[in-house]
Each structure stands twice: as C-alpha cells, then as structure tokens.
Image (cartoon, rainbow, N blue to C red):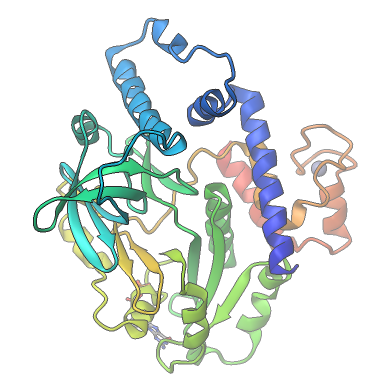
Length: 380
Ligand code: GDP
Ligand code: ZN
C-alpha cells in the first residue's frame, strides 16, 4: 500500500470509528460544541449543567467549559489579540503554567484567567505539544492567549482516569531490536494498535542490525511494510540506516516507544549528541513524587522536528479501546470488515467471517491475526 493510499485508508478508519463512537454515546463534548458554533445547531449548551451532579463532576464540567472557551477563541477569531502575540509550542507543562518554545527560544507562560486555577487541578487543559499563541511579557515570561485545536491526543490510564501524555504528536516510533532484547512482533502489534487508537502514524525501527546473523529479522518485518507501515532497519552501533531514521523523523513530532534496552536513547543520542534525554533509571529513583507522571517534555531536533521525552511512560495502556473498534486498528482487515455474515462480527468465532476467510487464503498474516485474537481477549 502506498503512503497516500494508506493515509486515505487511515482517514476512513478514523471516520468509521468516530461514527461508531457517536452512535454509541453521542458526540464527544468538543465536537458537539464545535457543531453548535460552526453550524448553529440548536442544542442548549447549558443542558448538561441542569442535571444534579456531584461536586467533582461539576468541577470536571467547568474544566470542559473552560477548554471549550479556549477553542471558541480559536474557532471564532473575531476577538482581538493583543498586539505582539507569538505562535509557539508547549514543550513542557510545569506547576502553574508551561514552557513554550518559539523559534528556538523558550518562554515560561501562565494561562489567562480562571484557566490558571483549573490547570492546577486538571492537567489536561494544556498538554505538551499544544500549539498556542502567547504574549511575551518581560524577560522569558508570557501569557497564553489562545490554544489551537489538537490534531492527535495520546493518553494513558492513570488512577483510573485519562491522562493526556502529549498532543499533536504525528507519529509513534516503535523501536525493536534484533537481539538483547529479542524481537517480539506481538509487542510491536500492541504498539501499532495504540498508535492507531491515538490517530498517530507509526514507524517501526528495527535496531541492532549489527547483531543480525542473517536476513531473518528483515523477513520477519516484511508483513508490516506489506500493510503500509514504514519500516526502517538500523544500527546505532555501526551507523547503518541512521540516515533513514533521520529522514523519518525530520519535520515531524515523534514519540518513541518500545521495550527497554532496544536502543531508543542510544539512537537519539547518536542522531543528536547532547539531546537532554532523561534515561529510564532517573524516573525509577524519583518515583515517589508526582513528577514522574507529568514530566513529559518535547525536545527539538536540530535537523527539524520534535521528540517527546516521557520518562517512566514507556508502556502505553490501551486506553479507551472498545473491542468493536479493534478490527479497525488492523489496517489489513479493512477491506474485509463489513463483508462478514454477522453484523458486528468480532472475527473470532462467527461462521462465514470474511476476515477469517482472508486469513485462510493467506491474505492476512497468521501472526497478526493471532495478535488480534489476544487483544480481543485482553479487552474483554
Ligand atoms: P533504551 O532502553 O531503549 O533507551 O535502550 P538504550 O539506548 O539504553 O540501549 C540499551 C543497550 O543497547 C545499550 O547498552 C546500548 O549500548 C545498546 N545498543 C544500542 N543500540 C545498539 C546497536 O545498534 N547495536 C548493539 N549491538 N547494541 C546497541
Ligand atoms: Zn468477521
């Protein structure tokens, strides 16, 4: 599958998923709001507040409202901006505000008005990766004036709630290694599902190619390029393939994931010596504080692009995946979904399942299907 075709397929998958979610639990708050303001839909925005809600729920609603107000300002750019506002990216969220980077310069910004107090209670109002307009004040300080709409949201489960790790991340870079630790495609599949769920593109890096005894590792990953994922083979040790890694990262915002020891930090440090990556060990020693959950930073790459640094958040929880959505996260299932005999076919036990037929015909890889089965089980 070509890149353009894959993009299109992805977009249609996203649409399907959105349609499904909407049918199941009504449009997401943000969308609902957006419709009202953009198309003048007649729904009463205050309706949810008339219900009796717990204080905690009400607090959450306030936060949602606040977030919506920010979007309003972005969607309805009628309100004047103070002269001198600058466009930037939030590279770190800190107590009481955030660090915004614009043209290589960092500014410590606070949020305007009540958002400031809300932010101390709810970390998701702003997140690393948010594109903002801010007003620089004196030396290295500023005020956030607007927050742009988010393209992607990467979140994980934390204390039974959704915690936004980073937003507007373009791609998940899944790093595996030929050996030490050995290649585990099952794990790659889990990361790919997490990427699809977050609406992120995915790139697979197979590192430690210097340890490959033959071309078995290359062959093992053929299945992924066949279904449209970009696969890069490299060795941080010998430098093989690192130019391709660079190309894959340039001009994009990426988040690295993969088993510990596959060489994520080594690759990044070779590509950009001096990159202030915090290694996994650091987070172990500071686990006692709340900081490990929030100290996500966006590191800018000299050759263009950003990398999200997430100490201690190497494993992505499969947050908020409805089992019914899962088939859509396997791109190779796409052309068969909907052709099964049973509506809402889970593609596991039902007779006359088109996906299983494709599996039998060898059009769907057996290992990938096995991963799918395991994920279905784990989501039950
Ligand atoms: P991370 O946990 O994914 O960040 O992995 P690290 O970057 O800490 O690397 C783990 C170990 O693998 C280190 O001892 C590295 O020196 C080693 N390593 C990284 N890349 C390569 C490679 O391409 N080949 C070999 N043989 N070892 C590598
Ligand atoms: Zn089926």
